[in-house]
Length: 343
Image (cartoon, rainbow, N blue to C red; front, top):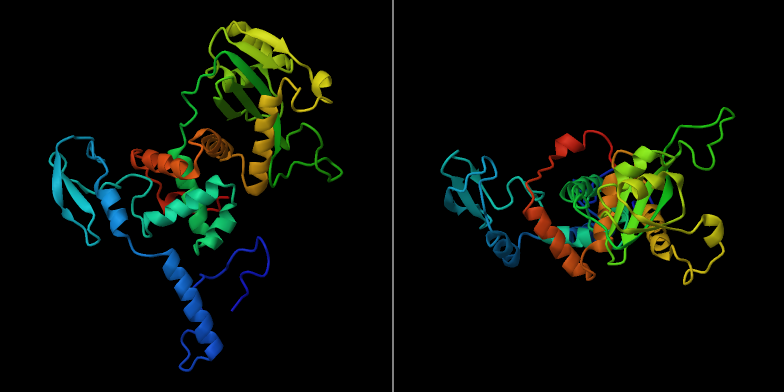
């Protein structure tokens, strides 16, 4: 059997519970030991639905039919696991509390999602979390896309006011093929970089928005910040030229601290320390998830935003996410999103 733990970052090419000797008539003592141990691990990680989980699912409030939106439905027995079923009087559709949600068609218990979310909120990589949970890495990537779906609109209604700090940071675009003619990667702010707009106010509220460009412009700056800053607020920034559109159109008071002025300041004295801390946390987060791409960059930022702005306690954060997930009519089908490789 291939040694699946021998190299950090190497993902499995076969399922964890596949044994090359499993069809042998006579197994050695060492083969039996390994097989029984791994099977025990898997059983602990993939237990059947518990009574607590079934009770949780059956007590979820059902407000309407997930197929047609009708409020005229009735109970229609239970499935073999004991989960309540419903029938819509209008369209005739049958459904459970999880139908058309993130947890629809689940094949493993919700309790495993709890561990996955805890790992994700603690900055574990998808690969390490999948290995620890005894899941295939593709399962971890699929679940990540489900998380992205739940958090898709999480920042849309955030409006900062009062003192508002803003600044842009830059992330390298992974797997970029854009190079100079001599074959070397471009340096500095180039097409190999992408700008991220970061803003935070004195109340601790924040936004992180991809600007889809390597250099902030008047348009990209307005698109990123324009709907997230209340008119009349005080803008504390580094004097970036494109910020002028915000000051002008939102009637903001401007307080400028140039990069030259702040570059040698200690953190406790730096007037832009609020935003600098966001940048540091973001860089750490993306180091752990170095497989991100342009397509899902805003999704990653939404996840980081939830980690930073959700409840402080990690278990409350998991509970908050689960409430969002079960109340969100967003079903992500495996075959629709996993036909290609998603990091």
